Image (cartoon, rainbow, N blue to C red; front, side, top):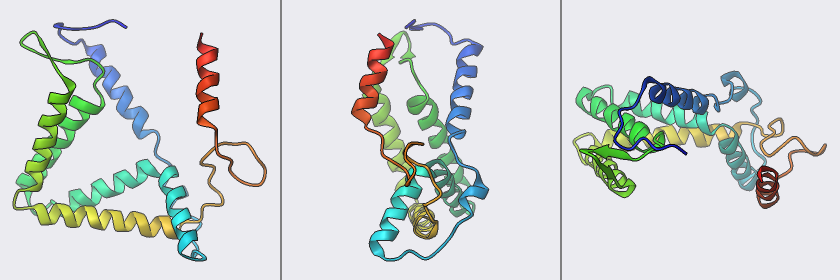
Length: 185
């Protein structure tokens, strides 16, 4: 792996980040698939099972829904919306989408320092006047996810793999990891 310590990133750096964002957004499922096949669950355990399966399958869609509801809850507080957007972009580019260390004045910044600064900035966002709006926005978004997850049927979803005729089968992660490790040697 080639390091870029102290160098100015090229346009390839930004193209790689954009490709990574597109790849992650590509993990979302089609909305029409998400909005089909509803029924009442048979009981509490069945609804919990449906919620777990739907969250595993539609996790990117659900994250987009919660963020959209949070965005709507902050529309009446434009300064908080701007701060929220800046903090979200900072988390994306300084923590989640970064492969190389951050270099400031020729010194590499430790990942724990970046994590601490981003966490503090997120807490500052939460202790502003709009704390109630943020909490209510996230709670409403999570409620939408739970209701959808409980009522969306899971029999047509293939979450764990294509094997098996009687329904989805779980993959053995240890076996999969060992197989991919031995094939790469």
